[in-house]
Length: 446
Image (cartoon, rainbow, N blue to C red; front, side, top):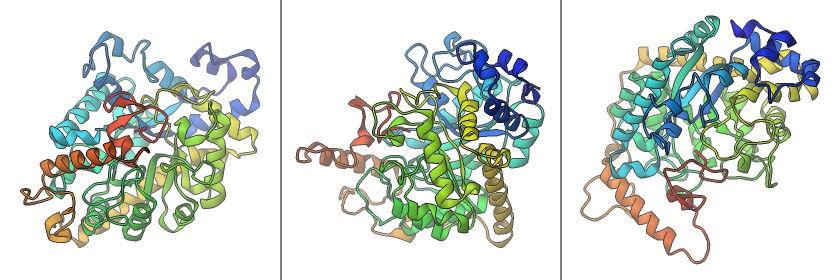
C-alpha cells in the first residue's frame, strides 16, 4: 500500500517531480508529515470534481471522456496519481447544484450530480471505494483505497421535503450543506438577505431529521445566526465541510469566533478550505495563510475541532504551495515546522472528522429507537413563511416553483439595488459570469 511508504526514497517516487526536490527529500518536517499520513487517513471535506465534469467544455457530464480519465493526466486539480501523492485517504465528493437549479427542478439536478459522482467511484475500483459509515472509511483506508463519500451542497435540493432528504440519504449522501449562497424558505445564508434570523421551525426539523438519520449537518455557507441555531438544536456534531476563520480574515463565508467557542460543547469540526478569497485580502494566498486559519481555529476552539476541506476543482485559483490534491503533505510539513506534534497533525488529518462522524452515527442509533421518521411539513411548521416573496397565485412554499419565483424576485431586487452589490449577488453570477461556470475565489465559491 502506498500509504505505508514513509521513506524519502519511496515518497520521491510517488510525488510529482515538479513538486519534489532533493532539498525536500531531506526535510525532516516533510518526513514527519508523510509518517502521519501513512497511518491516519487524510479526509478532505470538499472536492467539486463531479461539478467540474458536468460543466467541462470538452465533454460535459461525461465521466468516460478521455480528457476526464483519472488514470491519466486531467485538466482538473484531481486525478488518481495526484490523490496518491497527496496521501488522500478519504474524500467527500461534493454533489453541488446551483440555487438556480430550482427552475428546472432542484431534485432532478441533484440526482444527476449524484449519478456523476457514483460513476466516478465505480469507474476506479482499484483506487476508490464508496464509504457509507465511519467504519467503512477505515476499512477502505486499510485496503489502500480512497474512501469516497457524497456530500450535498445546498438544501434547496430537497425542495422543502423531509421525504426527499431521506431519499438522498438512502442514495449514499452523508452530509448536506444547509444552504448555498441563497437564503432558503427555512434557513438564512451567509451571502443573501436574512429572512428567518437563522433557522425557521421547519429548518430546525430538517436538522433534527438529519440527526435521526445520521447525516452530518454541514453549515458552511450559512449565516452566523443559522450556525448558532443549528448548534442549539443539534444533538450530534456539526461540520463545516469547507470554511475558514473570520478572526483571521473577515469574510462572510468564514466562521466567527463566537461560533468557534461553542464547538467543544457540540463536538463539531471546521474543515479549513483553500479558497484564496476566504483566506486573505492579499492578491495571492499562500500555504502559510491556510496554516494561519488552522491555528486560529485551534487557539479558539481547540485542536479537536479542525480538519481539511480544500475545495479543489471548485476554484479557479489556489494558494501558492497548494496547487492541487498532491500538495496536502506540504501543508502538514508547514505545521510541523510551526511545532505541531504528530498526534495533533493526525487529529487535523482525519481523526477529528472520524470522531464526529462516529458520534453522529451513535446519536442516530439512539434517536431511531426513540422516534419515527418525521412527517412534519413546512406549511405545518412555518405556515406563512415567505409570503412577502411568494406570488399571490402560489398556494404553498413546498414546491420548486415557489423557490424559483422567489429567486426571480430576489434577482430583480439585486438588479435595482442602488449602485452597490446586494448581498444576494453571488447567487446569480460568479465573478461577473453566469452561474454554472467554475467558481472563483470570492463569495460565490462553492
